[in-house]
Structures are given as C-alpha cells and as structure tokens.
Amino acid sequence: MKKICHLTSVHPRYDTRIFIKECQSLQKAGFDVSLIVADNKGDETKNNIKIYDVGTEPTRGKRMLKTPKKVYEKALEIDADIYHFHDPELINTGVKLLNLGKKVIYDVHEDVPRQILSKPYLKSFMKPLVSNGFEKYENKNAKKFSHIITATDFITDRFLKVNKNSSSIKNYPKIDELKLDISWKDKKNRACYIGSISKVRGISEIVQAMQYSDYQINLAGKFNDKNLENETKILPSWEKIIEHGFANREQIKQILQESKVGLVTLYPTISYKDALPVKMFEYMLAGIPVISSNIELWRQIVDDANCGICVNPYEPKEIAEAINKIIEDDKLSEEMGRNGQKAVLEKYNWKNEEQKLIEIYTNLI
Image (cartoon, rainbow, N blue to C red):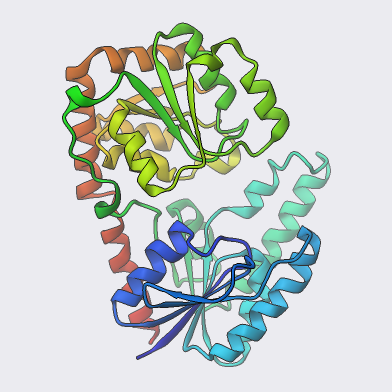
C-alpha cells in the first residue's frame, strides 16, 4: 500500500477540501493516508487517516518561521511515497522533500499574488512589489513539483505556463452530504447566508437589504472583525437576522432545510472574480435557489442552470427585491431549486473531481 502524506501549517485538521474530500477519497481508493497539521489538538486516527499535530505558535510570524521546519521533520518521520502540501509557506518544505527524491504535489487553493493586491494592511505602493515578488518565487519553485493541483481553471491556466503537470480539482460538494429532499411547503419564508462573515462578503448590504423586506435571514458563521460585528448589529434591520453563530454540518443541513433561498453576494474583488464559491454549490445541492453577485463567472453558472438571480452586491434594495421575488413565488423558487440540484448532481459535484484526483496519484505512482 502506497503511503501518502498531506501537509498543512494553516488549515484545521478537518478542513473540507483537505480532510473531508481529498484525504478521505484517497484513503477509500486504497492509499495509506497521513495528514500533518499544526493546531495543538494532538495526534489521532480518524476515518483510518492518521493525523499528526506539530503544535501551534503564538504569533503569525513565529508560525511562518518555525512551523514549516516542524512539519518537515514530521514528514521525514512518516517517509511517504507522495507528499501533498496546501500552504504557500510550505513551498520550501516541498522543495526539500523533492530534493530527497520524493514525489511532491502543490495544492494551490487561491491565487495568492492577486490576493496580495487586495490586502488592506499593505500600503498601496507595496502591494504590486510584494505581489510580483511572491509570484516570481512561487513560479520558480512550481516548475519543480511533480504536480500542481489548483481549485479553479483560472489558477490552473496560470501554472500551466511553468508546469505542464497542472490540473484543476474544484471544491464542488459531496453529493451524499447536503442533498436534501424536503417538501417546499414545509420550508419557512426565510433566506440564509452560511459562511465566514466579513465586509467583502457583503454582510452590511445583506442586513441593510432587510429594511426592504418583510422576511428574515438565517445567518450562520462567525464575524472575522469585532468592529464590523458591532457596526452591523446596530443597524435597524438587524432585528430580521436570526443569528446562529458557527454551525457544524448537521446544523447547516437544518438551516438549509428550512430556508427558501441562499445568499452568496460577495464583492467582486480580485480574489473572488475567478473563484468558485463552495457555498453556492451547496445551496444548489440542497435544492434552494441562489442569489449571487453578478460576477461574470457566477452569472454564467446561475443562468445556465436557471437556478437563481444575480444582483449587484453593493445594492441592498436589489438584494431585497431578489429575496422577495423568490420567497413570494413558490412555483418559481421550487423550480429554480430543482434546477440547481440537477446541475450539481450531473456536473458540479465532488465525485467527478475525486476521479481526477485519484488519476493524478495513480499516474505519479
């Protein structure tokens, strides 16, 4: 049995892409799978996957300096045939393993150089310098790796220029996890938003939209900024928000069961324009319509499937009008929900991506 080892210094041990999708799919395909994490929760074996914890560091700076070294030392102990790492700060770790004759996969979740351009804590004149510098460093090393896996076709196209062994493995949902069959008449007249809560994810506009609607929103997730949370909760329309806080997968399923529409009205930032929001596909799989930002890529998906309405994410009134239209027309919303679910079952699902992942590993071996 071939030994493979996934490495992360940033993500939680049960990360949806890393653990639930990739590690579990590879384990079921017959590989001996290990996962190295840095979360201070100890070692364990879960679903036949061995998880090794190298511990946390008190600051981001110390994490970036010390954690890669600890991850590398643990990786040497495991002595896997293939290593698969998930964080840009582990690029050098991947190169060192490559130099030992190991097969190494770099899993690129996001387009980091473009992300850097939108970082609020960097001064404007610094952003292009840092972005260009990181892109050169990433490309220089990316050409060495056995395979580059990315989360979107846009990122893959970038890496194909430096490494022909680059493929997209998209974050589509697992069919068996959130596929719901519930009578539409049993649903409540509520919209929902599930996920991390931040300014660029449109929380202010979502809450302001409710001044133009008589309905409520199920809000599941954590605010990433205390000031933003305080500013949002004093808005008059906050009274129409049902706050759930962080929700586990079972709680998310319950929220989706009772909601009639899911919101994914993120700002069209550089980071999101070419992204594939997992939540949008989870709403579709759950059989509820989607209200999404009018980002070109997202509009194409929603329009092709006829599964929702695209809006200007900066316009609360436009968001409210879409919510009202879907909630007030059960025939339309139920049809959109069925269309979205059908699209995920046929196209936008993890089963298709899983096959590509296993093929990459099989070819490497």
